[in-house]
Image (cartoon, rainbow, N blue to C red; front, top):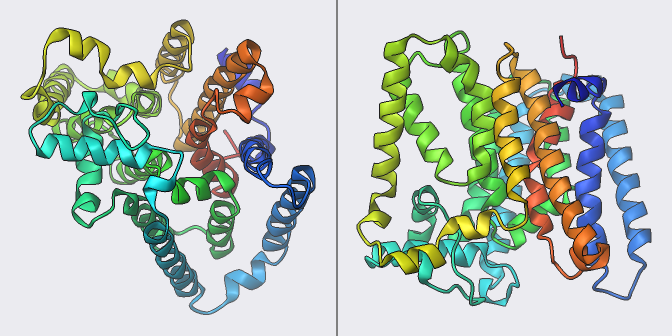
Length: 383
């Protein structure tokens, strides 16, 4: 498997292909619901616009990079988009949506604040929540602001500030915004008030921050790192893959005292983070029937899940640069999610999987931030 991954890491075309493939599914699915224009014509126009946008932004990169105060213009444009996203969030009534991630988070937070076990409560579509405990803390500020869907605009604002502070070329910052705003997958997250991609983006921002601060020794502050690891693991199970690939080599290189501090800290912080739910646990039968893991693992066979949990440990045995880690994460997560999609297609047919939502294609959005990182930030010249 590892040799196969190495064999295809030649150009950033890999990232662009996955970016376009993910968004192709969204274009086909959602433009199938109208009769004004062929969905295939829309797809063709979309692909042309993306290719032309990337081409001209690269062609005129020297001019863009020489514009005085261009970094502030990019930040200003980003802030306008942020305000637009806030407006969209308030304009769209969540109860009218056939997507319930916002509702699941809202129900989870309300239940915990009311001292109730959250996983037996129904959201606006009559489904139970799959939110792991740490999502309670992520959504809580926006719950108090009146709408948990505000998480997405504010995460976009964090992306904008990250770009503003970063040292990458201006034209690449523009391409980041272009690829985000030209992604139906990302725009779906905004419209549907979904927390999935925001969750992944927050993880990526943390990993880049930690790499920048502790590049030579990720475990310099093992207790602080154990807190963040426990927190992110308790948002979504799939984040175990990037955390393992980024940190496992550093864990092996650390001394015994550091390892013990990290393990003990991770255990204690995990319990503390889960405490609001643990103090309201119901009977065993209810826990078995209603728990978040039933929902988070429903699309992928157990053997596939186990394989892709083990692979990052094997890959991380090699000392990798951060750009290599981004590459491997892009490929691993893409294979995992597209294999899951293919399994559903094999069982129920492509039309049922895509158009009748037998497979939730929003999960493919987990890969999207990694495609943009790899493509835009030069994570292609792998040494």
